[in-house]
Structure formats: C-alpha cells, structure tokens
Image (tube, rainbow, N blue to C red):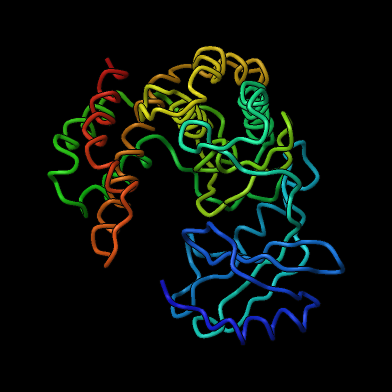
Length: 320
C-alpha cells in the first residue's frame, strides 16, 4: 500500500472544512482517518496513493452505495464530502459521519462495553442484513452492476488461494471442485456487502447504528452475505477461547431470524456457509502470507495458520 503524505491531505481537508485529522485504526483497503467538520466527528477514507483507485480501493464507489442506502431501512453513515482528486498522485477521498457506538467482534475481541447486549446485537444484525437484501438493486440505481453468482464467488476466492503457500491450505482444490459441482440455483439478486459480520457494524447498546466497510460490495446472491454472517457468528468456526462464546445465539436461531425478516424462502444456506468457510480460508491465508513478509510479524495473524486446514475441513463437512 502506498504511503500517504498527511500534510497535503490535511490541506485538502482544511479546504473542505475538516480539521483535527489523525489516523484511525482499520481500513485494510483504504487509509482511514478521524476528523472534525462543523464541530461534529467525521471519518475520512482515502485511497492509497500511487495506486489506481479501482475495486476495493475505490472510495467513491463506496460513497455511491452508502448514499444510495441512505433512504432505506439500512443504517449507514451520511456522506458529507467526496473529492475525486487526481489519481494516482492525489487519491480520491470520502468524508462521512462517525456513527454513534462501537465495533466489536465477540468471537475475536476481548472487551465489550455491554456484555449483556451481545445476543441482541447478533439478532439485530441478522435483521439489518435482511433489510439490506430486501431492497431491489434497481431501486438504488444499480441496474448496470454485474451480477455475482455462487460460481463466480468460488472462482474469485480460488484465484486468491492460488497465490498462497499450498502448505497453508492443503486440499483446497478438492473443496473448490465440490463447491462448483453442487452450486445452487440463483435467487433474486440483492446488494451484497461482502464482509457482513458484527465487526463491520457499529452498535450502541443492542442497536445497530451503521453498516460500515463497503470496500467489496457487489450485486449478487444474498445468500453469499448470509452464509458469511452465519459462519462468522459460529464459535465452532475459529474456535477462539473468548469469554463471549456462550452469549452468541445458535446459528440456526440467527438463520431463522434472518429468513423471517427477509420474508422469502432462501434454500441451501448450508452450501453458502461452506462457501464462507472456503472464503475465510482464502482470506486468512492471504493475511498470513503478507504477515510473514513483515519485519515484525503479528503473532495473532500467525496463530491463524494452523486453523486454515480446519476451516477447509469444516466447509467440506457442511457440503456433506
């Protein structure tokens, strides 16, 4: 990722009325900052300099979906400013409101402000996901977006797995072939967030106040999101010894919460949970690969290496 000179960024933001700009944790695809606009806290996302702002780096594409969802039942930040810049030297940026609350991933993080809120946060997250999937993409002006189906998702994450050490993910090709051979028929497409889990939602108490991190949104099969959400809400997926495991509602309960809220049958969710396990193995193997190249690798990332075969095995079991 290209480094960003903060002085020119602060000058650009000052001209837009944004002050007190400082880095904010998060933002793997974009650079994320916090600032102040008209005495209110804001979040600034900037594409990495030196790179074409396309795909997951396209912060203006993120602004587009956030603005489109503003009039729906899906809670999103308000887009306040955008600036196209002159990429790649001067990257595009997005300024949006800072949602009230905090992000917390109970099966990874260790400090939840409101422990008793965990079960209802998961349930309300399932309802928010259903609200997202109920909105026809055409109502959001997304008629020109390509439709991403189940097979395309398998191919997408297969491409990632080809770039990592095969020893990290033994036998992934067999799982790929099994997923391809059993891919379900598509259902009505919807907006797909791409990484919908509690860690990418802002919550206050039990309520979800914003869905954030729209780097890889697409239009496609809503079960892609549902399977990912359910797998990430299942303590058996990563088997991390957090103190919140007993507070997470059962996967079946969350699936029912989601399907009841969306109001239409969504068959074969288990296949999409298997796809999510495949995707998780691909994602984490890439993180491990990049982590091992660092001068000081992060221990928590390296600790995921022995979990990867388990993810593939669990996905294979789900297919059966």
